[in-house]
Length: 265
Image (cartoon, rainbow, N blue to C red; front, side, top):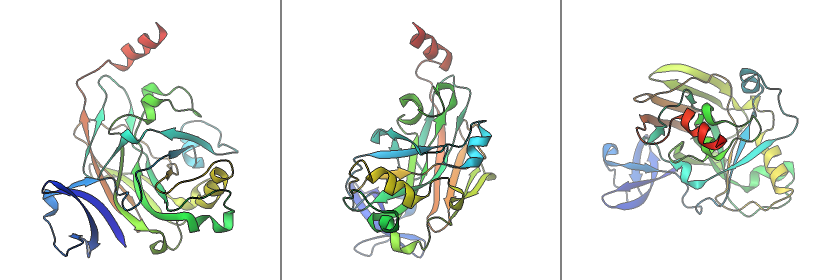
């Protein structure tokens, strides 16, 4: 089943996908244009931890002129960064390069500790799409993206649907793509991950407890491009649908150059 959360007529509702139409649990079909899509994390709790992977596709590492890692490059993100389908992401004033990152997002379904690889998918509730934007102007280094890059308000659209684990036969064989204003700019497949989903769950749960609602953003392949105000960015993954997002220029705040000068001072 595909499930989502939306705001409609002054309340938050859970909806499911009824042959391509959002349907309320009581059977009503609201006008899709009246819906405000929210991160699709119900009925699991709000995420306690958001894990993200850096350079988890060799093609992306090569694109950035970095050596592919020999162990997972994991960093954490703030929940404030999450927004829903069809929402706007803000491009900071004065930056030179902001790019999308289409990623398979794994939602943990139950408390898990020391999970062996062969049982890893049993702790998964489902999958969704994430677009984990990065502002390259602010990047400190390749293995530790700083908070200005990866925990910015509005810069991680997620959704539209949370697709049940059992509806995805093999999460490691899903084509993914990004289109900017209708033009294909990114194309890849989850089979090309350096560290696959079972490995990541085994790796993380070996030293910490995973909780229901935790998210694992699994990285992006090559094919990045700068996006600017007014652009429409559509990330698609087989079986999960399409996540639509728009870029809005932020007229408020320091330019990248000014921000860098402040740090030096």
